[in-house]
Image 1 (cartoon, rainbow, N blue to C red):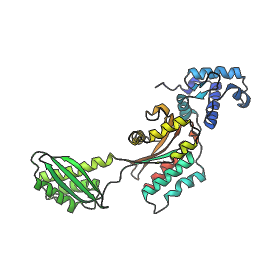
Image 2 (image 1 turned 180 degrees about the vertical axis):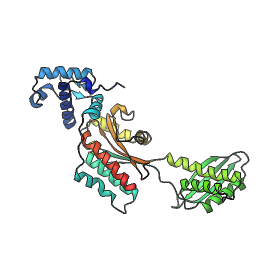
Image 3 (image 1 turned 90 degrees about the vertical axis):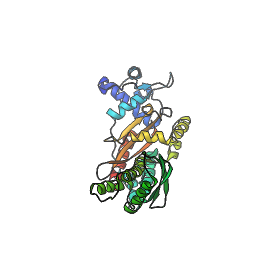
Image 4 (image 1 turned 45 degrees about the horizontal axis):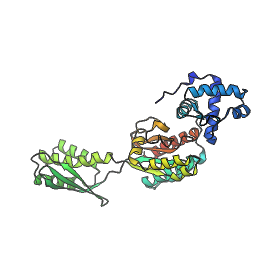
Length: 346
């Protein structure tokens, strides 16, 4: 990937012309010509002088000409420099705040609140709204082991809500069916009503306090039966996408819209992209080819993590739209949504 030029490489004239080209492009989506800038840009420069600067900016990789006789458009590299060093972020208006908070009324279930907030963010930003949340851990009602062979068993977990899931478990040599039955009885009687994570903590506490009354092999079976679920739960986040119609109603090239909608079907890759924002301290912006998933559709993703009351990242909220979007307005909006969700779950 080409390295983004620094602002220090641009003189005042080049910065002024570059900013006006980006502002005009983000507003209209059309190439910006030197005559347009000379007439309405307030630069006090001739079209020829502006063309010379535009040529310099093109050589730096910040602008591109779609046709020989057309004006210039900012490249993805140029948009990155604009967002990182030149953009002046807007304030989130009171109306926008009210719209984003409308779905977070007391008594609204968390999943419903996330869906409403994502839809509101989509409508305000005119992008598709995204939210990534961890899968909700099942509360244990009952667990049983079904031996399949001397070295394998099926672990069947029944949740408090009546849901049933199962996983295959590799067994150590010498694990008898009676041991598995004792482990299942212990989990179903002593750990029922707890989440998997809470059950692991309770098991460790009871073993440490010699209250578990389990032999070593049964302890191992209990721990293994819980661990296979705990590891799995953290690996299955839930992705909510709302407002794909906003992408169709915009002014993107129709072929790129089709490509973007196809990309959104690749949930696993989209989750991996959003997961990159989990470790960020602030809002992350992925522009075009900076994300392998959206390199063909030329799309941008703006995402920010939201946290629980312990400061731990719980999920990620964001939007996806064309690279030609109002970054100055949308970035603060995503950031505000993340902070709002952090307050909700704290």
